[in-house]
Amino acid sequence: MKPNIFEALEGLQRGKRMSREMVKEIIEAALLSAARKALGISPERVIVTVGEDGSLNVSIKRLVVEGRPATPDELGLAEARKLKAGTSVGEEVETKVPLDDLGRIAAQTAKHIVLQRVRETERESLFSEFSGKIGKAVTSIVKQRRGKLVILDLGDAEAVLPGNEQIPKEDYRPGEHFKVYVVEVNMTPRGPHILASRNRPELVRILFEHEVPEIAQGIVEIKAVAREPGSRTKVAVFSHDRNIDPVGACIGMKGMRVQAVVQELHGEKMDVISWDENPEAFLINALSPAKPMRVERDDGNHVMTAVAADKNQLQHLIGRGGQNARLASKLTSWRVEVMTDGETKGEEIPVGDGVPAEGQATLTPAETPPGTAAPEASVPPAGEASAPPPEDPSTIAGGVSARGPEAEQGSAPGAGATEPGNPTDGGHESGA
Image 1 (cartoon, rainbow, N blue to C red):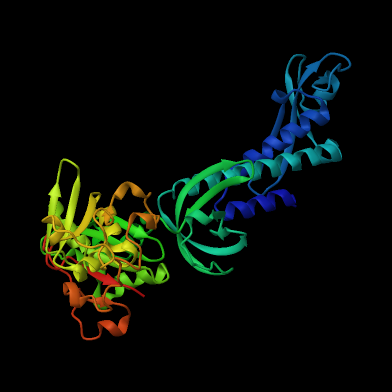
Image 2: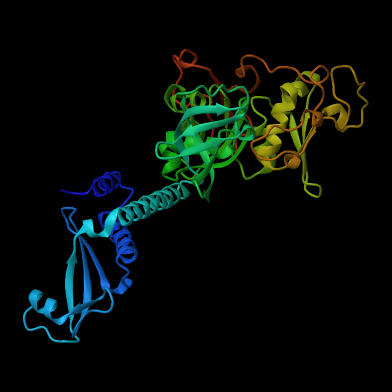
């Protein structure tokens, strides 16, 4: 009959955590240690074998001596010749040891060693598996909440989602399914410690890679992602094939591809825009659905100024709470200033007339780390220079708002998408 330990280890083997050879090595090492302690024999003279059927055999190589043996690893000549005829003094004879002779303490020692090695092997296997998933997205299930900390079930292991890696206003109810970005994996005495994130721009990039075959194939490339988690994200894309529209490829038929990303992020709005190697054209696209009358560039200070024709256009360029200009600054990696045409000509605009004072609408991409919202102090107060954009973005930039399947009825695939570098219509907005 097979020992229970071996049956248990075979279960681990079937779970692909341990190979059969590894199972045998663990048992052999455990019995070797137990036999050495129980019999008082040096390890090199103990032989432990595990049969394919799970049978265990312990043998001892004993030195044949004349007369009475002085140590456990010696065997008298008379006894040796009973086991093997013609044996002479100085030879080694292998004798089998019944497992019962090892005693209860030796059996407990073997069990302890086996279980310890199993735990170590499983921890190492999990660490190796999830270390290979760093920088990737995995599906998780909310297991429980401990204050602001959320514990996630990844199937074979658990991950932690701390407060600073969460999307604001997400509930994280037990049993809820969603994808997370694996930030890092560290080995601890209790096993791998996996840090997950929901608010990093890399998660958006990976979600688009999963939904858009052209990105996975390398035809369409995501050049930049600027994100304010839970609110809005801008994604700049470029096509290496002139016959493929990168924005249309990311939007998909009737907005299905971008909507899949929006739904995974629980309604976070998506602006997909064309990347352009020309910084001014890229900024114009990045500011969509708002459209500046022109862009001025200062290479020495690495600043670009988006010029608005009037106060109304200025408000649209800045966006609600400064979000539109802030995301454009992050996306282009340029410091962005937004002002009216009159301000660029030195005309004084009275503060309090719905227009920010000079310098108030200056956005710097380095103000905030990727994936986090910039401080509201860097933009004009909501009541002075900010105004919500029109409900229909098509009134500003000719774009298409993909807020649901109904909004796309009758639309052609990729509606609102334009070729890279087109400064007139550079993007597409999608929101839940």
